[in-house]
Length: 214
Image (tube, rainbow, N blue to C red; front, side, top):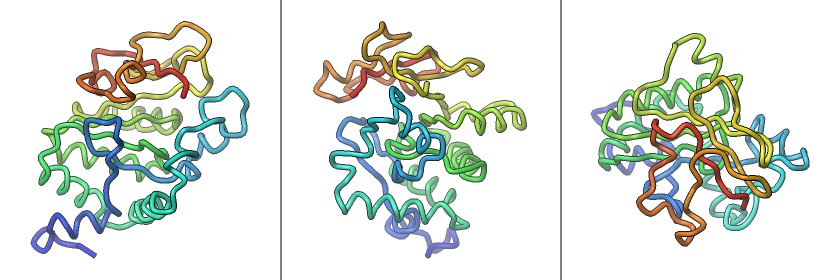
């Protein structure tokens, strides 16, 4: 495994972190682990009417063995000592301008969050979007450190379909099905399921993004 900057290559760094995802909807690379590893989401999967009860990341292509194996490699890489350095190296080497955290899965704990923050700090030319349901973890971080890096936008997701945005945080997301959406609506359903030119999820000027249940 790569342990020093002098011996690091793009190939070795990708192997170290378990590779990246490239969702067809996204305008950028992503990093995901199995939704079965979600802490809060795992509990919500058993709650009728929650956004996790029919999680998109628990069906479809996410159930292919090759995807499951990739998710497991990435999960195991989270505990390696140079994970953050290798992630930052990849993003900088590929000259990424946008990055999406967790198209599947969620933050595993404070050290995981701190490592994501370190990646953001070391990739100032890239805008990071981190959606999460780990509200208590986010609040613990903010109570301790005050704010996230300027290029890391954390959106706390509402746990229930058609619920209001989570209070007490500056950036959120919701899921609408029967009721009117809150804030800016994700245009992907009208654009072939793709972001196209929209970057609302990364935009600090957009307090809440509402996604149509899918």
